[in-house]
Image 1 (cartoon, rainbow, N blue to C red):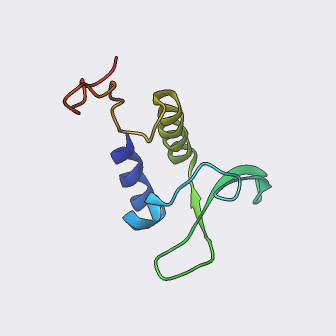
Image 2: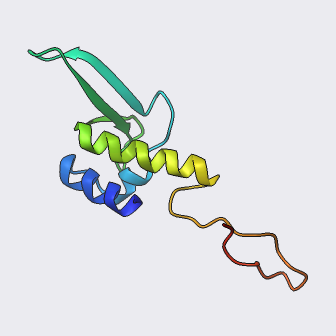
Length: 102
C-alpha cells in the first residue's frame, strides 16, 4: 500500500521519494482547505520540506490520493507501527524473533 502511495504522490504532485518519506500525521503537514476555488470545493494540501530547504512547501493532492494516504495512515495505526512493516513476536532465548504475529 505504501508503494501505491509513493507512485501516486510522485505522479500527482511531482514529489521526490525523500519528500514522500517526510509525510507525517500532524496538523502542520496535512491540511484541508474548505470552500476554495470557483466551485467552493474542499481541497487537500500536504506541507513537505523539499531537499535543501528548511521551510515547508505546498503540495496539492486530489481526493483519490488523499484516500490512499489515509488508508496507509490508518493501516499504520492499526498495525502499531509504520505502514508496511510486519509486527514481530517477542525475542526467544537465542535473540531471534519468533516470526510475524497474527
